[in-house]
Length: 264
Image (cartoon, rainbow, N blue to C red; front, side, top):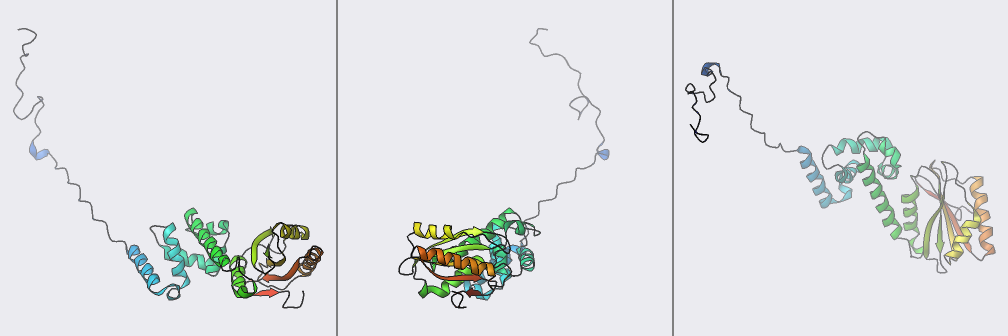
């Protein structure tokens, strides 16, 4: 026999290729077949979302309560899941839709079910609302758009948790040329420096200004500090030929005008 000849091998018992003892068929256990994958069940939440979107497109915002409008906002942040429960939880926590939009990001994040995507979506919508309200008054004569101005200030300031001081700068025709936040303070105080207010007016080539700040307490009644600060800015402005038209304090439900109240 040469190295190319196949070696002789004993023949294995029938039915056993490797020479092992055959297992009786009676002892073999059948392997259970894997159950077929169940088809995806229809998600009732998807149908709910479709219904809400359709109602909004057909009837607009008046056809929907606040929690459903908030759900529509949450849809983009939460592609799946129960948005109704979260929307109602947010409204219970903050009181109404405006307060939900204006809530600080840290406070929103404390609510069960609110993650970073929800916080981002709410703050984006808040910013869009502010921009839209602001667009109705910027570069427009302030006297002919006074109601729009008050609406804008309510949107921007009424539900802030701390005091903000803003100045509206006007040109010679009383057109609003700039709206700037000059300071942010605490829940009951904001530091204001008259020199900075009039300096910025000169930089913008403004001729007049309106002071605005909010009271987080909700009550727009001016304090003695509010009045004395207003007079200090008025006096500094007069020296430079600038006119202080008014000082508005924004509360939760209304605004107070120093001019209307006879304080200016």
